[in-house]
Structures are given as structure tokens and as C-alpha cells.
Length: 221
Ligand code: CDP
Image 1 (cartoon, rainbow, N blue to C red):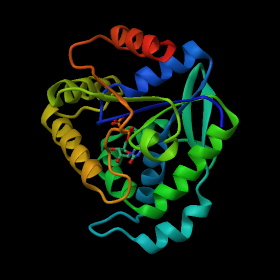
Image 2 (cartoon, rainbow, N blue to C red):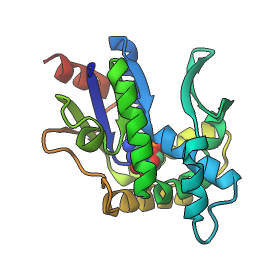
Image 3 (spheres, protein in one colour):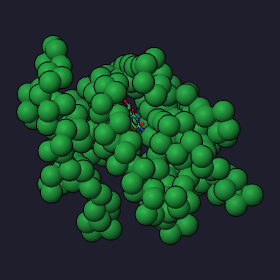
């Protein structure tokens, strides 16, 4: 295994912003594990497998047909699903509303965890998610768990969505962040929780650069 930096935490705590910056700074590969769960959710939605009930049989039968990759386009990292750029779709609210249900399915978790481990065998990686320090790479020394107040997180996500031209009211975003936290912490398989040896960082009152400086000094230290 190469060098791995695991950044876990609650929804919209700035994990991916930090993970991207750290990866760039250290020359490591950045892997957004949440994008992988979002891409599977998008695949299920376009195939009509998420309605009132989830069509588990169809999802599991078709897992082998899902190929998720990360590519660079105009200096941005994008997520592809079976060769198509799905970056725009996977950040939308319909995916956000369903992703935690899909991420709670054990077979989907093992399918994606295996892919994440394969990437870590070949590359130095900064990976962000929910279970990177606890399940995907429990042996890594660099584990961070980011958190922030619910209002700050919902506010940040609301701003991001507005920048992506998704007009959505603040209360919908707040409810989604709250319900994903609840689903992610209460699921039976790999629930969201800090690894025992993770360093917990509350980002509520700090700027992106302040959090970055703190994380880099901890990594170097
Ligand atoms: O960026 P944000 O915090 O909104 O979430 P994300 O990292 O894109 O992850 C979206 C969802 O995928 C989470 O709410 C979890 O349900 C799931 N996820 C997970 O279960 N395990 C991971 N390692 C990463 C994401």
C-alpha cells in the first residue's frame, strides 16, 4: 500500500475541498469516494430502480456493469460513469436525497470499497468519505475527521448548489444534510464514526486556508 491520507466526516464539512488541496500540495491522487456512491445512485435513478421501494435485485445484478473513473477535464477532476461525464448530475438534489439509502446496502459498499483499495495499492492518495479511516484503509496513520455545526454546513452546501445553478431553498438543503447525517451514522454497515485514532477537526469557525494549514502541519508533524 502507498501513502494514504483519510479524510472522513459529516456531510458538507469541506472534506473534498481540503482533500483536493492537500492532494495537489503533496502531489498525491485525490479520490472522492462520495462521488462513487453518488454515481451508483445516479445509475440507479436513470434506470428507474429507486422508487418508493428500491429494486435491490436489479441493482445487484447490474453492479458488474458499473464502471466509475476519475478523469481530468480543463484542470478539474470529473467523475465518469461507463465513460460518460456525470459530474453535473451527481451533485444534484435528487442524487443527494437518495444516496444514503444506496450507500447503506452492504453489497454496494463492498463493491466500492474494493475499488477504493485497488486505487490505494497503486497510488499515494488523499481520499475523503465516511469510512476511509475505519474500513477502507484502517492501517493508515493519517486520519482526519472533519465536523462543523449543522447551520454552517447547510449554508456552505447551499452556496455551492447556487453556484452550480441549482435553485433550491435553504430549508431543503438543511433537511437533506440532517437526514444524510442520521442515515450515515445509524446504518448497520460501516456507519459514519471517527476512527479511534482519527484527529477530529471542527471547521465551523475557520476558513478553508486555516483548516488546510492545520491539516498540513498535522500531516508533516
Ligand atoms: O460532500 P458530502 O459531504 O455532501 O457527501 P459525499 O462525500 O459526496 O457523500 C455522499 C453520500 O455518500 C454520503 O452522505 C454517504 O451516504 C455516502 N458515502 C458513504 O457512505 N461512504 C463514503 N465513503 C462516502 C460517501
